[in-house]
Length: 258
Ligand code: GLU
Image (cartoon, rainbow, N blue to C red):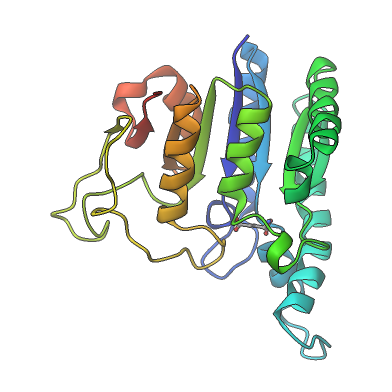
């Protein structure tokens, strides 16, 4: 049985106006359900809580928050509830049960917490329940936070000994220059020891915390632990199925294992 970790970024799940893109979420769930029925064990790391909560509350001009920490706590508390509710219902239509795992960085540091968390995800998988994982943004603030959910997905993939980590963003992968420049080319393969520094754009996505720099760093580290990492565009039709079935036809960046 192949075990994979799929990370979905906030930019994949939201429309240009910041609202939850229910059609995209549903399309991703259909693909994951297909993989599940093919026998893949899937762990889903999904961002989108903060973006989702923001879009629910943005019209309110009476919000009482004193700083960005307050905002993040408020938006994620509301947004995570909405996000997981949508996932739960969408997977239920496929006859698949999902469960929510909210975590924090220290759960990967202390051996005892790590084991407890690993056991939780194992027992879910053993019972055919798909873990949907996110950082517990309501309590993880400042130095206790993961750099972003790319880091979280890398830690989950390693802890759960996945064969593959697929990071879905709103871009096809890593380019040799600015992706909007037609002269830039998509880098299809990254081999152990390749130096990507010259190519990576430091520009960050508008919604999520991560950027290409952090994705590359995590991807190279995870690939060294014998887990193939793929960065691809979650907005493309049937991207997950194509990555796993017709790998050569799909625009994406693959980090070959070390
Ligand atoms: N945990 C955050 C959320 O769900 C996303 C963090 C990130 O952008 O990577 O909104």
